[in-house]
Length: 208
Ligand SMILES: C[S@@+](CC[C@H](N)C(=O)[O-])C[C@H]1O[C@@H](n2cnc3c(N)ncnc32)[C@H](O)[C@@H]1O
Image 1 (cartoon, protein in one colour):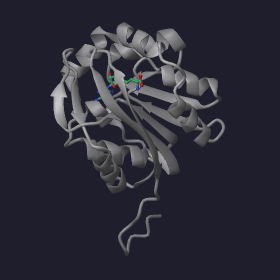
Image 2: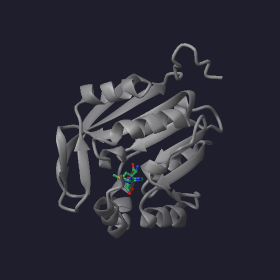
Image 3: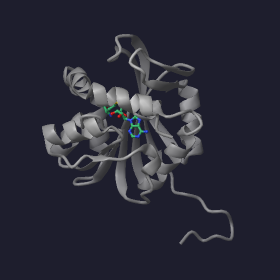
Image 4: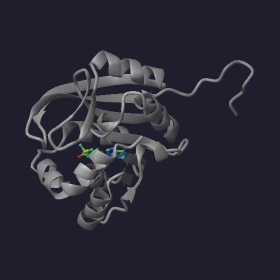
């Protein structure tokens, strides 16, 4: 379920957040992700924020579908990049076999732990066979709100690997680091790249 207080915090600080991510250097994880998507391939930017990543992907010749629960983020993304961002929550993702890639960069960390497996399964369903998932999360344990009111769930790398495997992904690689976020505190993060394994069907169901 979408956390209203988190979305309210992003609605109130969309410009601040856009300025925060703008100062960063080109993201090597984004460039590596782009390299794995076929030319003109379609990518879902799940929890796109101001759609800075979508704009880079579009500049590299990809088709993008930036979505976010925050109306203000969607407005800002479209005003800045004219990129067709639309308001959609993680719960609304019901596409099947559509995307070559799903870019979920530090967005699913706002989902409650009990919802996380369902959102990963929805991302897997949305991907074409052998589609690529990028997942950016914060490392740690448990959950908490930051001083801006944003809700976070934290995981270890092993827990994330287990969740991804259970959702039908094969983990390809990861990178870790530490960074000061919009709330001002320095926290460890992880990005993981994974490939969607084909769905398996119980014997007797052909799956065709
Ligand atoms: C830390 S920002 C990341 C934005 C962008 N992916 C980036 O890398 O800059 C998290 C984004 O997730 C969005 N978000 C949080 N909960 C969501 C939900 N339930 N459904 C869709 N988007 C959500 C927020 O509105 C916010 O724009």
